[in-house]
Image 1 (tube, rainbow, N blue to C red):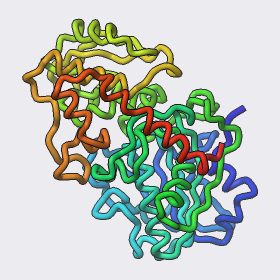
Image 2 (image 1 turned 90 degrees about the vertical axis):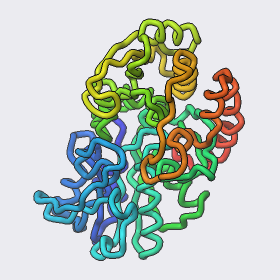
Image 3 (image 1 turned 180 degrees about the vertical axis):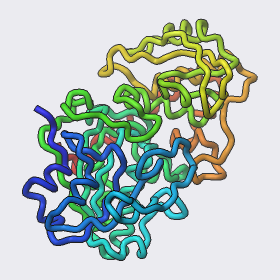
Length: 390
């Protein structure tokens, strides 16, 4: 039996009253489909006792066609549904009063990936703020956390490093659905919007996406498969380095390497580190875009052999330590800017503090970093209890 999504309950179930008679602005992208591949924009544009008046796209755009971070999405008009498409990753990341002029309720239907730095949850938070300011209601249609809702991993973001890839003090792997995140952000962190969350039916916290019976559509250009989401909470840290995170290959965030690395030696060293649930296979690759374009990189492909045991963030910290050990004089950390942040180091923004960078540069063992996480993980586990739906 497939999980029934929040958008399906909103349109077909008892929650229709949340949008009946309303003018709807829909925040969505290509992954906003139901269990039969029907896009939410098409379903809400079809005749009903509501009117779709505007579309809003997150980072990468309404069509998810913009590849790189920091490329601002253009505003447009949707020819099929004959409504404006407003970019929330442009000169503004929050709906303006003008954008909301013909909107009574914002419906948010975005597929998150369960990682703190993924910007869709902050687009949602910005929508909540704008809705409160301009007197608009919000309905968040819940979707699965593709890597489950049980595991939590990483330190809590230091507010000094808050940015658009981390607005709130939560761990990197937070174990929340987007609907639960809406509840947490709105109540615990004081946004205070008028928001309704439409839960899923049949989803359990232990479920990974491939257990839901739902079709997987890439939520952004470099999350091409469900398997990518399993490694992403750690692999994304390499965005803050000169190491390729596999962008420009067919295995982003699974292929990790650099031109100055011997892949055979690196993979052997990584397997000797004893990261549970993973095998590090030697790999050589040439990215077709992004870092090291058409330059041979050596490194590894991270094969997850037991996703329930695999700690993606620990794996990334171990890899960073090994990259530093093998090439101590090679520049490792990218300089600013990153996203909309122009002062702090990108790795610090991604990790949520400067602790990781300082530890790696000082030659500390990875355990010195990872041993600091359990206290934050347990504190967040207790904090989130009030806001869980499943």
